[in-house]
Image (cartoon, rainbow, N blue to C red; front, top):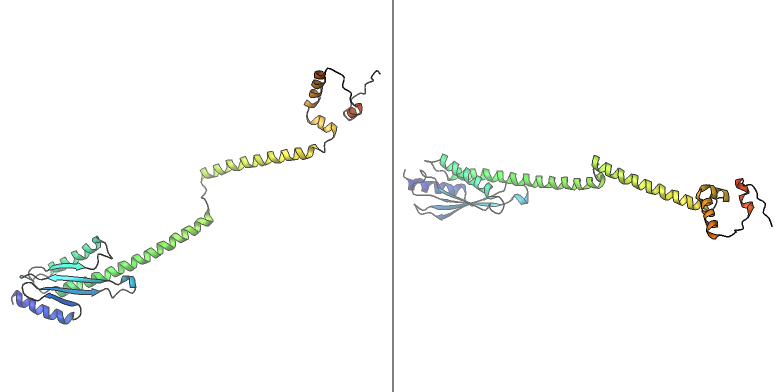
Amino acid sequence: MDHKETQAEELEALGVIYPDELELMSSEYPNIAMRISLQSHQGKEILSLFEVTLNIRLSASYPDVAPEIEILGLENTFSSERIERVQRVLCDVAQDSLGMPMVFTIVSALQDEIGQLVEDLEAEKIKAEEKAVEEKEAQERKKFEGTRVTPETFLAWKKKFDAEIRATEQKDKMIREVEGAGKLTGRQLFLRDSTLNLSDVALMQAAGSEIEFDESLFDEVGFIKCCHKH
């Protein structure tokens, strides 16, 4: 059987196998060209649905020479690297099938690749959903964890805390002194600050005159009463 007869019989068989998917672009030997459209119907998710078009052109020496193969419809969903991988698979199938009709074998290989593409899409979708959940959980944990404690952050906090405690104690001490000052007796005020008696003497010397005072104020501190000449 020559190449022309082989191609004619294969076209007839393909028409029976793919009545809806197959479209002949040219049925004249030696320029036979066809288009086969496939759906990713295996996918359960709407996002996994896409259409793939397989263009095949047979040369005059087909099937002793591999056909020209073109894949369309994947570029909007998959990376160029992933599409090239599918293309290589189909080319390898064609090389392994030289000498016999191979369009059906090539289409079957493409259907297997479509199934893998669908699984890849669904796996990526699940991965994206899991990542979103993990990120949300991480954000929730941050609300309760606060800032993680390290030796450096603890020392910085301790230094600030001690300074605040000292400032608070100093402030409380000053408040107590101010509040208690009005309740002290003359003796307590005198003894509280030993500089009071020195400052009084300095004032008397600076005035250069007699200063009258009430001797009874000094009874509490054990002063001996003095007799003054009148």
